[in-house]
Image (cartoon, rainbow, N blue to C red; front, side, top):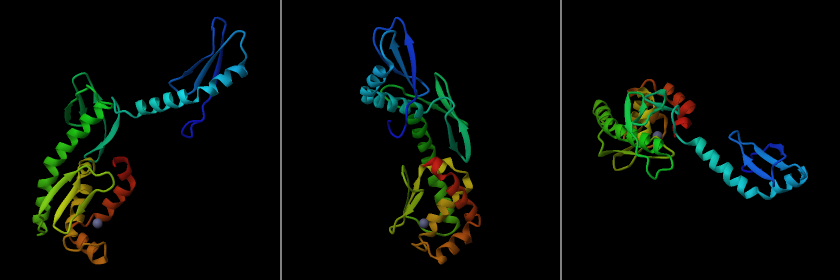
Length: 220
Ligand SMILES: [Zn+2]
């Protein structure tokens, strides 16, 4: 067993095999080749001794499977988009993205995430400034960052930090996150007063919260 995965062992007898051979199939099963005169139990003992090799191969296979490639589906502007990978570029919705392949574990992912982050930086900052002006909230600075566990933040100095992944959400949800952080300029807590402030500028906040609860993990 490796990482909680139990392996099925397919046994194949081969007349011409000279020794036991173990292979990990693309379906994640083990195929054990047993020479004509050798015993199956000996083969299974052999397989058990290969535990470290199996673990290594299995993890490598899992990593490869997780890599972004043609057909990988991700959220972009509130829709699920399947990446189209060609020799020249990756298409993600209306975006065409160049990929540099050299020396990267997951070049498609790196290229797409970098590009979306640039798109986010270009769009989210003016959007946040416009919404701040609409609701007459002063902000010191808008920063678009790569955050692993939150959508946004509001510092006591008035800096609003936004996760670039907001670009993956429906615009109404992304706007809600921005309004949410802006209202922290008025109420630096999650009191009733705070939610009343949110409701006064973003009447659809409950719906947006529901979307985040349902799909947020698919983005972060
Ligand atoms: Zn908050």
